[in-house]
Image (cartoon, rainbow, N blue to C red; front, side):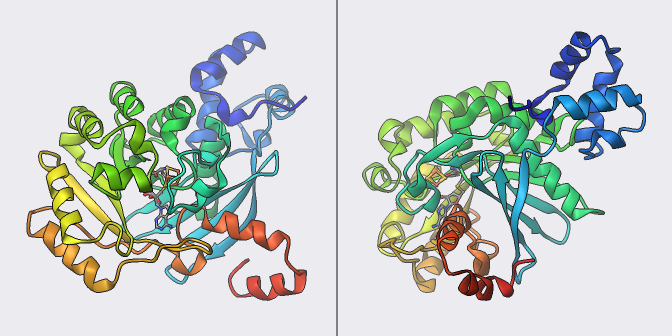
Length: 360
Ligand code: SAH
Ligand code: SF4
């Protein structure tokens, strides 16, 4: 029988466990703090616990639900990790250092069922949801790699649609912001979604963390072609939910807009976008699409991007151009995992040559 993942347990779950094992209740908080506050994941190091409890913990739970399969370091110093689950599936994690913060881009699912046409994770389909413990394990691994520094910001922009794995994502977020856990502020945890309207509304009531919306088009017909989710929840419904989202007026909402040549980058598209954003405190990240083999689309030209950007900024909408961090190491969502899958079938000598440059 597989053991339960230790990081799946919330503080109240640990309290239940102590009760069941006839261990004093205050031990639950100590265990929780070792894991999520001190980022120590070997029970043998839980020095304020008696030996018998440490042994029990080691025997009863899985403490390594994800292992590092490979690690790539980009020229811009971002690190991309491929992590392997206990059932041999690959997920991606990106650590992005900036001058005054370190942002972690983590995964919420293996694959994704939303089927956006420009996205390699979407092409995979959904393999399975990650548990809250597997989501938190990514943060623990990153903090352990960073040693003296710590992750300061979390964005759910790796593999998967976080709001399609609602319960696990909300449980993980609540441990991220708990003062006995990672103690991040709500403003530093961002859930990115393709626009699942009922779950956006639910998140607003349950745990209003920051929201990012992958918009990519402000015309219903065109957006439905790029993102099938739009057929279910139209732009009008999405906008209404965003206007009612509790944190939207305080933090604002970030919109991701991949720039695809001839698909969504005309001034007419920009005009529709401005109309959609009217009344929302918005920032738009313009991201030249990162093509992958077999994808029949290319990124917009630099001139097009600048014109589009100018149209927005002249109307007081901040619109920085963001090149996916770690472009040289398959920056965008799902691209590294897909590449790794191809490599598994490659001649090992060729593989070695390819990896020599940047894998450690
Ligand atoms: N499913 C969620 C979160 C993960 S996707 C969402 O869609 O918001 C993270 C971001 O990567 C999204 O904004 C997505 O649109 C973007 N993305 C996907 N494929 C891309 C590509 N080929 N080039 C650039 N960005 C891409
Ligand atoms: Fe899923 Fe996001 Fe990719 Fe769309 S962009 S397929 S929602 S991961």
